[in-house]
Amino acid sequence: ALPQIPPRNVAWFKKGKWVHMAKIAFEKYFIRKMKKGTSEPLYEKYILKMMGIEKLPGKSK
Image 1 (cartoon, rainbow, N blue to C red):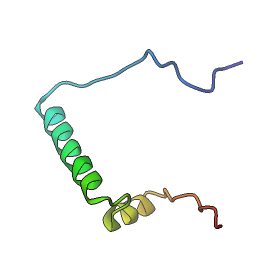
Image 2 (cartoon, rainbow, N blue to C red; image 1 turned 30 degrees about the vertical axis):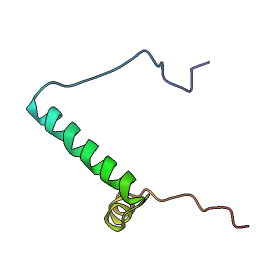
Image 3 (tube, rainbow, N blue to C red; image 1 turned 90 degrees about the horizontal axis):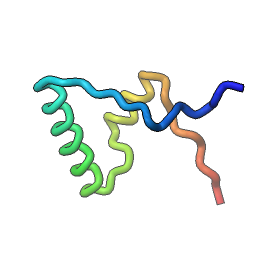
Image 4 (cartoon, rainbow, N blue to C red; image 1 turned 120 degrees about the vertical axis):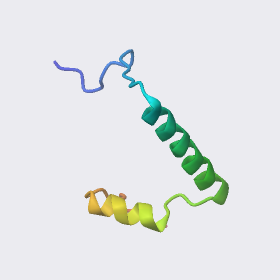
């Protein structure tokens, strides 16, 4: 049988100034998102929808 979960001991990384800048930009974006308490900003929702990614429907109580 083929494993369904890929091995965890495999990592990949890139080198270059663009990687460093991308990491800093993502960290600032993520920290700001957590401080504001917005789990899904409007622009993120539409970009993900354009990519064909949607949230699963929640359970109603």
